[in-house]
Length: 348
Image (cartoon, rainbow, N blue to C red; front, top):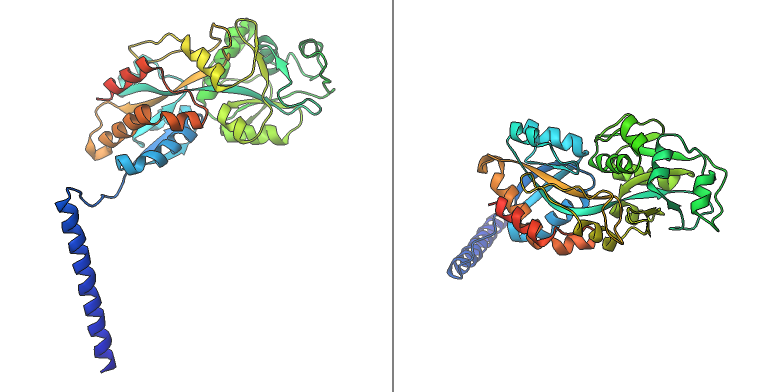
């Protein structure tokens, strides 16, 4: 008898739950609201520079767009290869893909945000933000011509700062990286020797120094290694409380890296309307930070619903149009209005 009462109670409870569910469903339908479908998952891979931004966009937009992003931080070069291979729904790269490769891969390329690449250093005895360098001296550090922190050329730039007799330990990205592409593009612009002997690329034959994977790897290494110097996206330096170098810009000013100085550089950019690319390195103008980059998304042109093409476009429409607050929170610079509108038009 006890067992029958338990079974009857369960049946009554199930009947009650069913009634509540049906009532809620009917109320929702009457109000014109359908139950929310499970969020659609899309996959992206590539730039570590863009990773904080895309992860933030996903967290903020999921409830409104019904799209959630699984993003793999594997570097720009690998991101380009993954989208060409069709193993992800979009690739992310700070180095723009050449037009011929875009056409061969049937890819649509568009910018999503702008940000600064900063030089970070761990030099004992030097106050945070007090170290000054020029582009040519930075290139000389990375080509092995300058090997000590108390080199006379560095000392002359930093009056009143006591520089230690300590070897310089330059660090670079070990993976194919859009951040490396932009950094080496900058070194080539300020040093003819670097441009001739090393050049630019997502991966180059570094004359000296050690390698680390990702912006996080660079930031961690510099934080824990005295005498080291590296390059990373601004947000990683801020998040890890690393000392950033003050760099001389094209106008001859020594500039502190900040969203304002990144914005000043972005304001002077000229955009290629066909591929929607721009170089912001060593930009003209007072107050401009000299190493600024645009990060790009690479999306298959003929993607359909079966491989999440609509969801990818929905995600980026939201990010470019409604994600500006999230961009600013992470110290990225939103796209200029004319460029943003052109991206939205292209995403149609």
